[in-house]
Image (tube, rainbow, N blue to C red; front, side):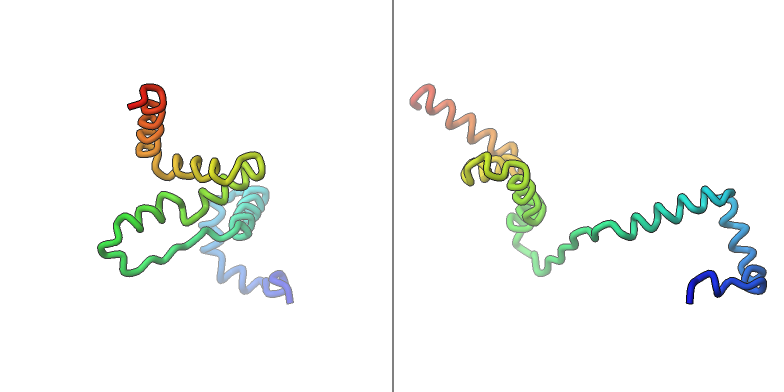
Length: 119
């Protein structure tokens, strides 16, 4: 049984108030059709990741790390982009730079200064 077979003159009359309200937002069949297509497309999008963390009291650093690495999504994206073009150690360096940019840049500057000055 299709949705159209449930449409009767009585159902239209009973739904007239709702249809009049909808006609304000979608005055033409094309407008209504476009909205239906958009909403169906949204429904078919992949579901976003949900993360449930419990008992995080006293675990600030661990919680922050989960947020900064986007639950592993950053590492997956780095692997997707750089694949076999970089070594694992280089991909880890890039990931760390993304997770902790200030700290990583300070460390890189310190290492560079140590290498150039010997101090």
